[in-house]
Amino acid sequence: MTPSVIRSGAACGAEIVFDLSREMDAPTFRAIERAFHDNIVVVFRGQQLTNERQIAFSRRFGELEIHIVKKYLLAGFPEILLISNVKDEQGEHIGLADAGFTWHTDTSYRRRPSRCSLLYAKEVPHRDGRPLGDTVFASTIAAYEALPDAMKKRIHGLKAIHRYSARRRVPESPRPKLTGEQLAQTPDIAHPIVRTHPYNGRRSLYITAGECIGIEGMPQDEALDLIAELDAHCVRPEFLYRHKWQLGDLLMWDNATSMHLAICDYALPERRLMHRTTVIGTVPF
Ligand code: OGA
Ligand code: MN
Image 1: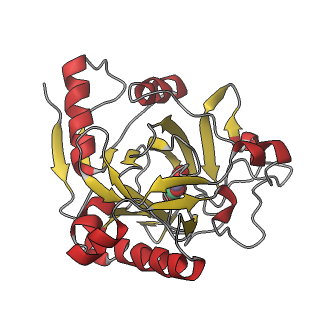
Image 2: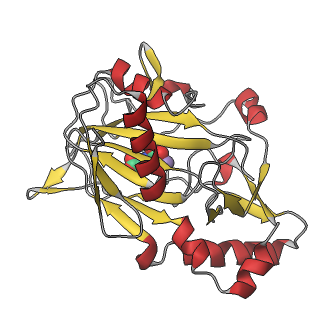
């Protein structure tokens, strides 16, 4: 039976009604994959997943990436990266505490950036009965399509340069610094500003001010202005979907056709814990 899909009504985002602890045959998977590409961000509510199950479902979309920050990989399950503000008895963060605090797409610093990321909500902070720590997504398909023709022509064929360490972090970020060896594994990488989706051929914008440090063949001042202009365009309200978390949400997003931002409006003792899996994608074109 094809799972039902409930669209958010925003530029992206939908709920897919399916219990991911059940077996999933190939036609059902294909229906889910299609709904995922169509809606860019999809949530499966009320899940009860073991680590193995989250990993197995994620693997259906491709090979999993073991995140470069090793400190926060779940013991025994290196495919799962902990995203959390929680600290252990020694006062050490148990997970990445500053993931996504600026607009970005996941692992754009890779030659093969993430196809999709999956975030499973284990603990969601609340205040006065309302969830905190929303995640906001921008459809970069909608953003690309809304560009004036002159801008589409101007950026056609251009490549932006992405850098891992470029992203602005929170002040005094607890995130461990990359070792020299890890830095050497993440050289600057140029990707097309206008991407073509590898599955459905749709065009999208692939550029964020937090991660792009220049544009190939363009003077630096002009490049930074253009990056800022396109970044600001992408996050116009009409392109956004804001996800309000519930415990048991398995949310996944398409890194080729969206960018996202984590809202940090909570603090301990308000606890947030997410399990993230990351699927490696193809070389952008
Ligand atoms: C991520 C990320 C956002 C969030 O895991 O890639 O950006 O709201 N997370 O935790
Ligand atoms: Mn992210």
